[in-house]
Length: 311
Image (tube, rainbow, N blue to C red; front, side, top):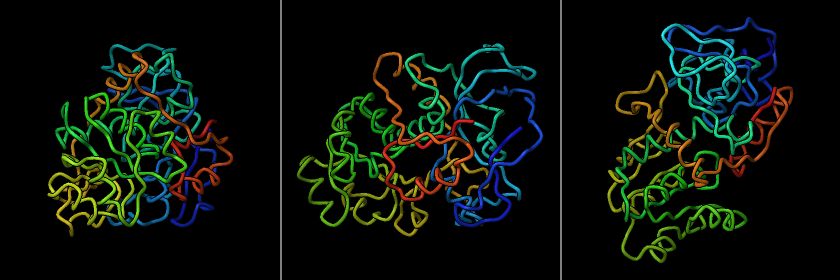
């Protein structure tokens, strides 16, 4: 089958499509014929080598964490899903390999009828991350939450999860994305110098929790929250120096950094989609042969929503 991989760390040009053996579903797993798969910032960081000490990988490495497709193999012990079902989900974070014609998933849920394949292909990682971090921050109705980097692939899903929990949500983004954030039920703010004052103007009573999806602004985010314990980042590996928790699902997570996955986020996403309360914004969908362009777009950090590949 055709799959995306890289054989050396480096710039986007190192990723390419190769012919590789098909994977097969093991116990507790399913295989899907992929209709769309996501390209996340974490994938870009792994490929670049920036995470080689935190998330070491064996080369060649096949990319892709989340995907959507049609079930064509069901492993031993799996119940509740049949051949031909349409699902979205995630691969084993150690093996990945979802940017391919066939992918093995270890967590999945039924694809909402309201979603396109492209939306579903980029949904699982964002939904799991949103649920994981909001659980850690213990967000409950009536609180005020700040999401830094709210227009990106994960941020745009996380703000909707937080709104659904009954929180007032402030989201940072460039001004061109402010109307987009308002459409998601978010109070927009511009990131950069002066952020603390802008957030205080929007939330005179203070902010209860902060989710950082962008990185690079932890001192301001701690000042907004008033306590580093109320800030969680998924993007800033200088977190420890600021007393902030770094949350990620990497299999080789450094001590104190990893959190248990929140796969209930997939079921939460299905329920919210069924109620018309969750969109999965797609910034761009590229043919798999244009994976270099997909990585280049993700690397800009200016994509509104998810970047996905279609076989």
